[in-house]
Amino acid sequence: MPPAPARQYPVKSPKSRSLRTKRPVVGELAYEARGSVLSSRPVGWSHLNWHRARAAYLAISGRGSDLIDTGIGQSQGVIRDVVLGRNSAVWLNLVRIEAVAQHIQHVIGHRELESFDFTPADRVWVLSYSRNVEDNQAIFRRLRAAGVREVVYVSSSSTIVNRETSCYEYPRVKGRAEAHVLTLPQARVLTIGMMYSDERELPAGDNISTRYDELAEFMLAPRWPVDGARRKLLFRVVSRPFANRMERGMYRLYGHAMDLVRSRPCLLRPADLVLRMLRMRWYGYTYSSNRLWISTMS
Image (cartoon, rainbow, N blue to C red; front, top):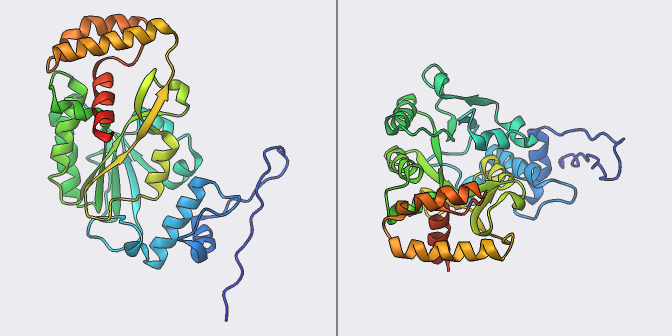
């Protein structure tokens, strides 16, 4: 007997507020996605719902292994996503996205780490950050002992500056955390850029950046490199205009100063404080990180 036709759900028109759309559950979304899992997003579906449907279909059908890499040495099955970093700025913005809030039901902070009941089906997204290197290492020891399915450490594109200097604390600590988490065989590193919802939130100049909805889509349906690599870069270059000629001139002057100090950019911290007072955000390791990534990508 042929399968029943896919159920149709009305799509709310942007001009109408009276029509209430029934929200399909993940299983129903997966059923509707079954015939076109490799095709483009159906008309009327949001990107996030389509990625949720596709991920659910792959998990149910077991077809994920020949399309995308969704886990390290694991067969497809039910995965419970857990976020560690309840109070992180990234999570506080992600949770505003409805699909993320519905999909990820387990969000914990450092205080719950020891008492939380992890399972072998857990994929843990680590958004937490501590200036104390030992605190970060304690997180990974706990996850190793818990025997979770997968650990995804969400890192920062700023760690690239560690190639030239170790004077910046944040990139230095994040880089050490990356190295430590990769000692876990089930761990991966997801590198994101400067997070934003609206491009106007970004500094002037060229920025290595990631939209919150891009990170949300990845978390709902992870797509790792199929060559077995354990790192994924999730960012792009976003260019923002300078407020005026003076800011553009200061940006160029700062670049010349960076070239002069080379491996000792922290000598420019007095200038960084002035730029901060002027509400300019492209100085310090942000400037160095953007410059290094763009030169690497070009």
